[in-house]
Length: 420
Image (tube, rainbow, N blue to C red):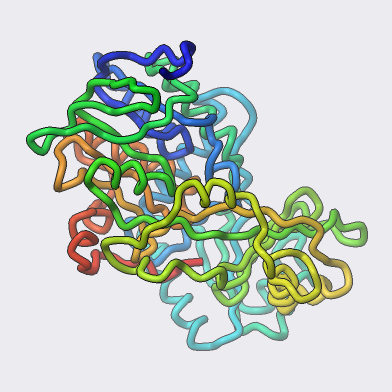
């Protein structure tokens, strides 16, 4: 049987599976509906999965209309988070700076900025190399002679993921939702194409007619065990941290992206770096059904650093550093890789989330597959899936997040081109 302190309900209106940022936000928006009972089931701890292993970046510079609208919605929530939930700010608006060496890529970026402005991102703009060098506090920081231009948005930045998830959970609890840590969901029971209950390890059964499956890369394991697999796979990604720098102040830096590839942002007075060229995705992850993955092995390896991806001279961390040294040449002398952290992206075939009721099972709602944008878009995703559950209209276009096309290996609308 489950631990006695789980205090699981026997029946509830909506079960949210997963207390990461997306599940927590969904619970918050569901709990604001009067008379709707909500239970959050989490197997380990709030923000224990990819939320706490995120690079925690936030941007409005996308090529997909829905992604831009999600960012605008989420930005408003994050800017007012302290007033809504209490506590210190969770959003550091240091900006996002995309640097380009290629003239054609820069011209495409310039056109994107014009479109982003029209979509409501008023302060995104294209910069010349000289304008990059004149950004406040950043003179001499970048290899402006090597670039043809950049795009810049000062209201982008980075987030505090664990505080965000905790804030949403605590807020949902104040509204009457219940949190059950240690409740490992093993499946969703259905009959006649309708959700009937959630099954919890130890033989417990929670009756419900609506389930929000927001368990990150675990989502497909729960969904598949319920007879409704989804094309979401876990892909390992690494973050590399430099030592705290002694000869240069970087704590005020924006997040810097070099040629839509390697990126860095401040961590204290050091840099957190990443580059998602490797490891490769599992073979077959670009279609449905997804490749089989071993959940136990994935859990064991979540924080492990695979051979070749560490901080040694011939390992991937040095490649990431070398890429970023093209943007910031002083890194060759002042940088280094001191620490490596790992975690998983939960990816779909087209790198965008599934925010959709399952066409095979009424009452099963998916909120997963964010491909690195989970913490960034958690408020918008939580609001959208909560609206779907109660039959309301979400605040941004939803056709690009539907599950049905993926199940048929069809392309979804409004594809994102700026995948970092």
